[in-house]
Length: 212
Image (cartoon, one colour):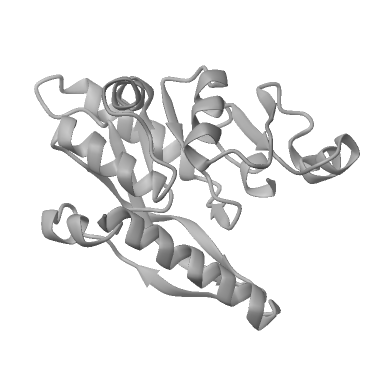
C-alpha cells in the first residue's frame, strides 16, 4: 500500500477485497492509504473463488480503467502517471488502436532493496502469449472491455488474469506496451521453504489453468 500512496498521479481509487481481516487489522494494513478519498473495502467470505472476488471488486469500481494488483507487486512512483499518459496519447490519434490492454516491463526487488531478474517484454508475440502470461502480472484494462468479457464469456476462478487477457485480446486484437520498468515483484528471501514452495505451486497451478 505504501507504493500506492507514493504515486505521482493521484486521481485513482483502490478497491480492497478483504476476506480475512478484522476491522483493527484492516486499518493497520491500509495505514498508508487512510487519507485516500477513494478507498473502498469489500468484505467477502473466505471461501469465494477468485472470479467471484473480482466480480465484487469490479462492481464497486468507478474508474474507466482497472487493474488487478497482487500483494507482492510494488508499483514504481511514476507507474500510474505513465499509464494515464499512454492512454491520453492514444486518444489523440483516433485512427490508431486505442490503449485497452496496457502492460510494462518489471523486475524483482529483494528484501535488501536490490533489483534483479528484469522481465523485458516484447511488443506483441502471439505464440508467446498463448504459451504463458508474459505481459503480467500488472495489466491495466479498459473497464468497458472487462465488462464486455464478463457479460459475454464470464470470468474463471483458475488463472483469472491470464484468462481475462486472452479473452480481452480476442476482442481488441491489440496490446499496448509501455517500454519502461513500472513495477517490481517482491522476493522475500527470509520466507521459509514451505511457504515459498506453496507460492511456486500456486503459480504453477495458475499457469496450467491458463493452458487449459
